[in-house]
Length: 616
Image (cartoon, rainbow, N blue to C red; front, side, top):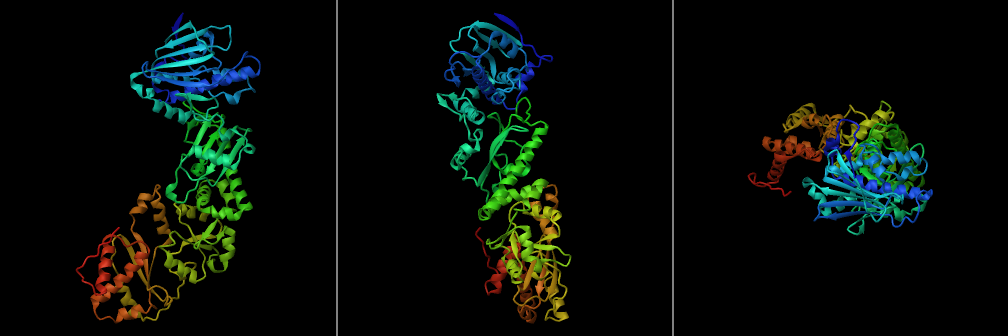
């Protein structure tokens, strides 16, 4: 029997390894199963080149619980170790057997070897009071050996009996880690980290992994049904995806994977961190920032690359040129796919725009290269939902009526077609084309593309009266005389909580509403952006709404109001007209809304003391 101390590269880092190697202790099972996969893949490689003799038998990994003995065992039938190899690989912290194997057999098995990180085995001491390694080498003339360590630098190494080739790692679970003796907890960890490992893994006599997931196959080998079935395997409760992109690159970096475009109808359904990162089929993380462009974090699926550098716990990316290359490649592949669908079947593209649009807009805002590509397939949907325009198509269709005196195309849009219907109808009456911009990202999108698109300006359809949406009209003559105009301005000089209100009397069409409430484009846009968060959100959220009440002096109702002799009634009529205009902007709330309802009942002849109760 040999006794000794584990040789570390710096002054006794073993307690640090034991306690702090990984931020999440359940990682230990991923590391040990990954090592077992490595051992199995090494054996396959050695057998393929004639260095391992005899039948390989059933190559599998078994994870076994013994609650009575308080042990968790990970067993493989892989390459095994000799006493010298145990001393070399287990007794020298951070000396990686897989790394050495890669160097020796370079060009033959690199992609099949997962564990070239060095410290993975020692994660077992985070949950164990003692670890035993019982191993039989594939070299038939070498005896089996048993290595034991209690978490201190001291170890023992003895010869032992073992009937089969391979390695058993027996963890004697410590008091603080009893959760790892629960079958449900162990199964949960295995399904999270090991569900796509390339060697069959059994727990409680059931195989828990798919050894050949779709992304490891060639696109030519897969049908649409195969892709959809794999999506269901990843996200069993989601709707069928819109489409997918199969990544398969081996130069200048290795990258495989499948990215799915999920169906996203509403902005509140947005969920990031749904792409799973793997390294040779070992799950690493769902935090793929930097590998995947920010705007594609809304996608779902799998990315697998052995070329992505990871730290010792495989949980965080480190700076490396390959990461940027992969990022750029994914952006290009997505742009290629969208452009392909747009060019081959525009109708299909338009039908999916409700879901695709969010990705495209987000990408145009955050990625300059994607912005250039997306200009050709970004679409505006008209307010009726019947026609779609690219920017150039919209320009061609509206340039005659919607080019302002500065030579800029004015894109008229609505954020809420139902609430803003009155404004939309007034704009359409003038021949204008109104498009829908109603997603969570549209406020920020508009501000960004205005700075990138030449001679384009966005104006929300309720930002001004219809006559002023494209160019300010100074001559709006009214049938009212000067005294009547001044009288109306005084009557409309109302104090509304949390609103800074100005009043103007103009001569609009007699068919236009009697009072129109508008909010300046800039301030209203800032408040819309504040609603989505950001550094200025708190500032703009607390600012009062800026509202202009445009009183239509040509509307017949004002002849009646001005002739009303009852000053109290006249004031209430005017207040109601102002409230109706504010209601169309969604600005009449709380006590102001209650007062409006009660005032309306009173003007219709109801009891002024009665109270109207609104059911929510």
